[in-house]
Image (cartoon, rainbow, N blue to C red):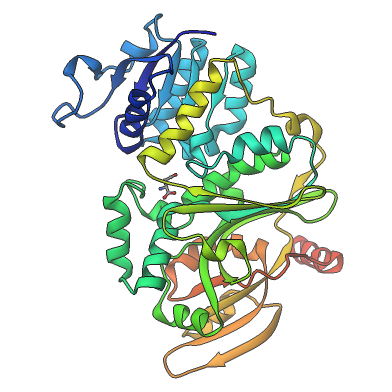
Length: 413
Ligand code: HSE
């Protein structure tokens, strides 16, 4: 067993959480040698001698054999992580944005330098979902992986729906508690969940899918009308990320608020908790739940990776080799609820079928089927309109072959 000498980048919510955990864990032999931070003026709860402001003090220190990267900035994190791997230092990171944007290259780099990069803390905080997808489900045929994977947006939805807080008060609380990203648009816009979903797709299905290829829509434009609609039908609104098999050859994925019924396990996942349902061919349905944000829960996942690295644990990316034939598609139909006011907004979604429509004095809604590929193509436009979209959770249907053929010939004209 290797004696671990840790160089830590970042001493924010998660960095401090990890430090507390390491301190309270007497039997665990790992020493934090140095901590690299940016702000020289910030008061620190540790002696000044622990801190450095120069990343090379850690990266060039031969005594340090493990780098823990817990900073905010994804570009700087990328520089630190790639340099450390090239120096053959094991890396543990929680930076989901950096991972989602560079996963393919980072997998190759681990192979080239025979050095592990572990990142359990990047998805769902304390829930060991990556390790489970990688190890436990390594030979299972997975139908879908779906869940609440952003703690801040779930916290806001819980506080507004259950306790009647205003959206802005709930968001401020999520920020004060250290759950939210520095730019909270990443949380409420579904971008953080999108990055985490791209990481899950790799470990569930062995495919590299870039964040820009996946549809995401958040909770930023939720209104009292939407909560009223959900409440009257006995449903809750939850921001869900989903990847699922469409057929033998393809998978689809998206992040979208969903109207969740009481009998769904995710209905009772509240506040900063995350919940993930794995639907597998043989194990059937399994449900994971735990705190998805916060210093100690996320720090516990970092600790688990540090601990695993003492035994030379690395992700083997077994599904990457096995599932090369699978491809990612957005040629599926989703059933969605659209709350709108202006008729042009209804036109924007190009409903293929409308099952229900309501025209009220203060708001209108429709429930109907739309193409995921179309939603992806109008993603930015959607964010600028006074509308709200949520999936009804009805099964994702592949777009019929003839519709695809007609669209292709239309495009070719
Ligand atoms: N902002 C993230 C969340 C932190 O709320 O889930 C944990 O990844």
